[in-house]
Length: 551
Image 1: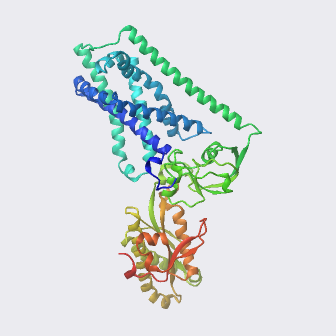
Image 2 (image 1 turned 180 degrees about the horizontal axis):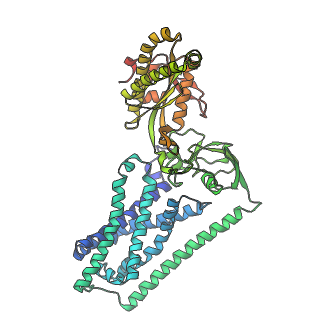
Image 3 (image 1 turned 30 degrees about the horizontal axis):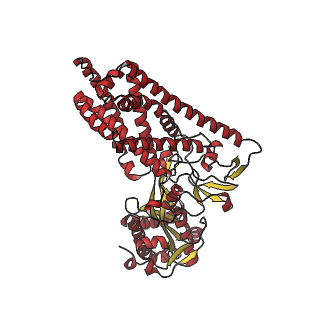
């Protein structure tokens, strides 16, 4: 739909519905846990807070918000389970899924004892009544398990959704402490209120009669049976569909990975195909289009794939993915395709899936020393070590002075990252200034270089900006901090392009626009960059000048 369409005509995406309903339910659970924790102060304090909370949640607005969110969340969970062709998933995701589907069974007792008792028999919510009814060891343990399951499910959902965001990672230790502390305080408050009732001998003002209790228990059992049968029916339908899809005459599709080819029933996502066949495939968010770590490059007829949905399109646009890149968790091919996962998970002993780091908007500058092969042929190895050491020092110092990180020194090439702690426009301005500063200092050095080594010194640079994964890569103890992604590959290819263009710097128009200098660098040129499906608009800068760079 056109982005200019009226907001009222835009339907919320499934991800937004899941997120919003989950936040509402998380707020409900957090309010009750906090209310329980007030029992550490006194039973009277907890009772006062409970009345205020119940007034909101039992009102029309609160009821619509709570039960609407619960219905949406359960329906979306059922739809997600139905869409899954494979139940192979990371352990954290499996725990969250099991806790989520167990919650309605656990919450049935709480809702019938509190809300249905109020609606059917006008029995007001009261801690004295609830704790008196739950004080037996079995009932109390069940209540605490219910609270822990609900809270853990919500916390895992939030963690999986937010863990790729830098702000969340910075404050993770504080959020984890709060997530652990709140249910502990709630359990202690629950026990404290029970002890207070024992000591004072206080009786609740209102308790259900035997007939009312029998009716409440029957309602609870009916709710549990209805939910359990509905869940079993869903699982049975999944099994029937799986049997139907695996029949020999059922249409299947072929997915060609770089190292193998597999056949899966039509309707499977690429991520499900990878997991079902034991193909290592990274997916940080759990297959909910909240990250792009499962992205794949797709080659095949356009008729074999559907256009990206709202959630996938938003994620792809955020990382500025080329047209031939899709999210494996969302792509369900209709026909044969070739797919190449772009983020490979770390393998080997001691592998830590989370060490890849985070996605970040960065500017990448590549610098390459020209005519190195000819110089290597004529000079002694230790003389070459001196040349490289001097060259790396010049480039590294210029990069650091401009706010970047000289990241990799490979052969006669240097890769520098800008934007780890600043916005992308600032990062691009820093990278442009670094390119100019490198040119000025390399020219000063090369003035005496030819007389000493009998060889003229030259170099080329490539600069591009965009989204990249920033973190540690490597094997076992041999790791390095770097950036990974299309932007890095493109910057390296632009550095290669500088040889053909006879220019010191080749910069993408996007990076130049971010730096605010695109209009001053002449007319752009479309070039074909290896690894990209479409030509890229670039600008050729024969000799970057400090006075023309952005300071």
